[in-house]
Amino acid sequence: MTDTVLISGAGPVGLTMALELARYGVPVRLIDKMAAREKTSRAVALWPRTLELLERSGGLSAELVALGNRVTVANIFAGTAEIARVEFKDIATPYPFVLMLPQSETERVLVRHLEARGVVAELGVELAGFEPDATGVTATLRHADGREETGRFSALIGCDGAHSPIRHRLGLSFEGDTLGSDWAQGDFHINGVPFPPNEFATWWHEEGPAVLFPLGGNRYRLILGVGQSAGDVPPPPPLATFQSILDRRGPGGMQITDTVWTTSFRINERQVNSYRVGRVFLAGDSAHVHSPAGGQGMNTGMQDAVNLAWKLALVLRGLSTSPLLLDSYDPERRAVGAQVIASAGRLTRVATMKNPVLRHIRNAVMHVLLGVPAVQHTLEGELAETSVHYEDSPLNGVSWQAGARAGGRMVPLAGEIPYGAGDTPRFTLRAGASAGAAPAVLRDLPVEPEIRSNAVATGIELVRPDGYLALSAADGEWGQVVAYLEQIFPYHESGQAPVAAT
Image (cartoon, rainbow, N blue to C red):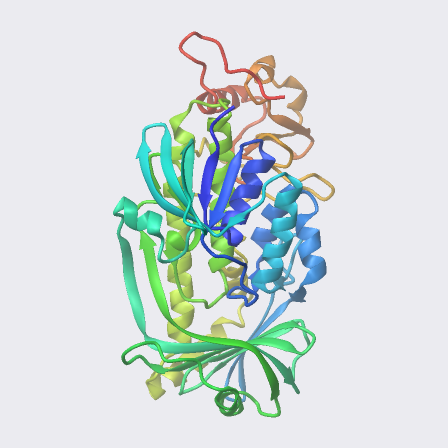
């Protein structure tokens, strides 16, 4: 068995990474220098694609959904005028909603599932230093009492946040900008909100936007633009200021009764120039940060973890010697990170226009555009991250002219188990009439693909363990499938395949 993988950072991204690797039989050690978990929550949204991927862990998504508040409508206003009403019900997913759930609750569920697999996050343990080499890293860990230990690890994964010490140690650039505006947010109990609990609202205002997310009951997350930046980030305003701003920008009649917590921040739009250096990987905020518009930061990081874990598991368990697997992590996820940064940035810039003429034009144009079903569908896919695909991935095989395109997201049929469920990262073959003619050589691979007969009307589709299409071919073109899988699971120099997974 491989040496343990060290994960630095035990937030939702690190927890997801540890859970995915542990589920696939890879030993992990999860550390974080924080002494105890935060009770406040930066992130509150779980989007459909994240829930689809977490479902592979067996009951995890259902547990989260039972705890959270399902929001199906996004409202946008400018003053009292309605700009758009976007409904998420048309997204082709088992989870046609955004789940509003405090990050602390998401972490609590992840922790419980991880501990059920025998992994306990070590809080109060800091990564003091590391030395990478061709086959892993040697790392020094510092405990809260000052004791240090040095160990050997097969890989190091940095889920250690926007100020990532691992990224700094590697000397990687974190390119981008800090936007020149200040923001405040908080969780409050609010009465008199004129929307049902399945709707959230954004108000565009000359002073700046206001966004109200329902967390369940009368608890809400309120985010406000509070002006141009000058000097250090100011402290969050008092409750009375939150109330007065909400009164000016919203429809009135809403009463903030008490504060759960508040904070202030500035928006950074930055991305690392490489998500991987040898056996050291970056995920989540250590690799990308962006505007909170759309609430996609935590989701994108958790999907980084899902993308990397199955590839790393195949390599570290000795099931694949293909360099394509680990080489694909950076181009796939860096492209997604860039898309999310651009999308969130556009939403922010649209909401923060200062010129009154441009605001008037914006309101008129966006009212028309967001009333077009095709435009709504595009926006829904960007927010839900169901439109994420790997069009230019080095893992993409052929795309049959009449079939789906390699790199696209695949959704199991009703009643089917999720792709990539179980204790081994397994590809899935969706075949039509030619399913019974699958060549015997597929059974000799280190990881035999699962074959789902009659899953497509015609043709053959090979789905990756993370639910993205590897290739599509016409009926009977099994040579394309065999050639692809033999590239993922190449034979050793001896001519013998690695020992098959059990």
